[in-house]
Length: 162
Image 1 (cartoon, rainbow, N blue to C red):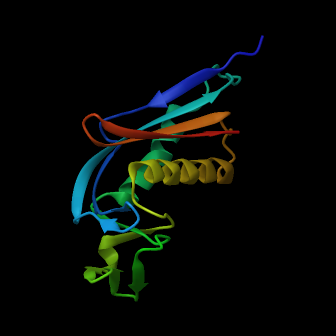
Image 2 (image 1 turned 30 degrees about the vertical axis):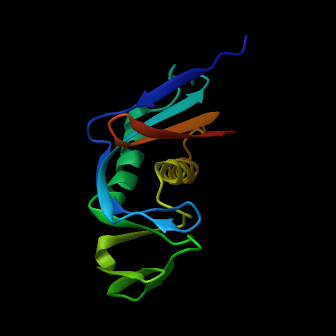
Image 3 (image 1 turned 180 degrees about the vertical axis):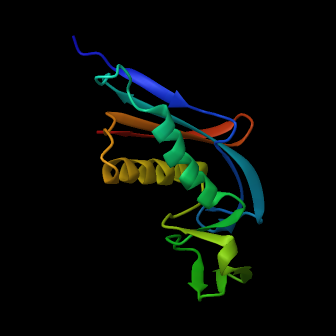
């Protein structure tokens, strides 16, 4: 018998507030705005010798590290072909057509993403978690799901199977 279990965390401290904007429709750009994001993480796998899928404390600690890096920052998609992102030690400049934003470097998180959608934020968080699990010698789940909510009732979930 092949059994699979799911461990899920979705706690009040798995939240971050950030500014962003996305490009869409091949040539439109949202206005700069922000969200109070909420994150839920689910790991699928067999039970280990302790009879759990994954250590909840380790999962929560790794998730909080990533979430704290995003919290109270401007999220900048560095792989968006419609944006020109230039930076130095003090400033980040983002240009979209004739629009231009200038932010202090310390207020930005440069994300290797095509857009700062909740779908891609979920993928970013999942990838960072899996990298941390591997680095720390933690078990790799058979599947990871990261749900990111940007507003009540507006969520996206990224899933990766191993």
